Length: 487
Ligand SMILES: FC(F)(F)Cc1cc2c(N3CCN(c4nnc(C(F)(F)F)s4)CC3)ncnc2s1
Image (cartoon, rainbow, N blue to C red; front, side):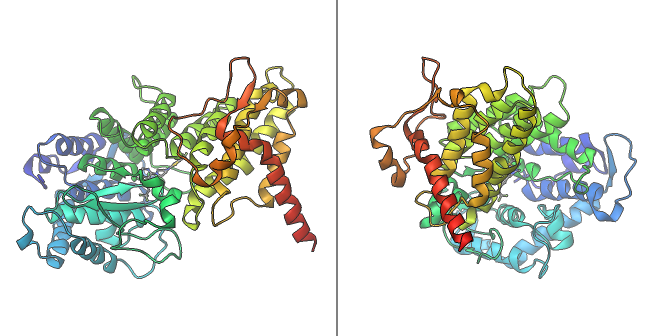
């Protein structure tokens, strides 16, 4: 690791965004691996100076300038982090060796035991080593990142960050295949720190993405800390300098090829580009498509977020037919999983799509009578069925139920908006062995299952065949729940 060297120190005091980008560029292009502690402290210091309560009086700073960041501020924190790690773990005997589970647990304990007793874990700006070193507070991602940065500081180049869509852990050892929990997940769950990643029921949960996590290189760990930069000043306002810095750093990482296997980072860049397009760069729609391609290529299409990034973009831009297709594709991913209590985040995502976004679309379009209304398009009906069917299949074989009465009303209301002649154009093809798919939930090989056949009818083929009992299932649940409520 290069560490904090003179070539970077001469850029201080940091006064503008390009000097911060320059340091990241130096670190990423050096022939040493980038120094995670240094970059996290710098990114956290910039974010804190522009977003945190202390100076919430809206900064009228020169565009692209930053409150001045002195060298000693960063250097003192950097040395403090090294002192904490080296003070707690003696690595003299393990020079240039791979890391052990007990050392990883020790590093995780050092971080864990130095955190403030109790604080609001979901608050913003708790992801960086700046937050850890100045406020003794980290969020769940921040703890995992701190452990990897700590192991790097101790000289272990085999310890890397592993990322699912809602959790983080580490991989280590000779072939980098050992795994260890190092942080907590969700609310009220006992942490499993030190244990290897679940082989049990949790293996089928979305939380562990069917063992297709993003395994980071050092540069991808830099991409993770950059993705975790949070420009929000409050619920409605962003500090544009921080968003601009994040966007420039993501483009730097993109151009160096470090986002190629990181769909969520590409999606983050797409979101930033939708708000503030960079002249001369590909449109954000292309980035959302790239994120999907990355997930299909490297993660066997087992990730949901690339499709919900894209669906959200189409929805915000009133491209409702396309949004239905993205959401149906997201549903094709989740149908392979068993729903477990650890999967609340993605449950909330599907709940919002089904019970807020789709009903909103139905409301705004049913007022118009245009001939090319999506209510006249069988492929829209087919994609909606595919969306709902994926959620039903997600529930099947799971210990925890997904659907409840609250799902049925918006669903039935949506489906009934399509006329019978449109619905009739959707053939639901029943493969003979569709029942056998229930329990095995074979992961599908390709990306989307083609739902359209050549004679212009729209068939829900193979695994979607269960759609024919989709409404029965919902209706049976509705009557059951109604019976219960009427008791
Ligand atoms: F480490 C954890 F535990 F925090 C899991 C990770 C989350 C995450 C992320 N996110 C989470 C998903 N995310 C989304 N924002 N919008 C989303 C979508 F619903 F529009 F798809 S998904 C914001 C960025 N972006 C980069 N890397 C990571 S690693």
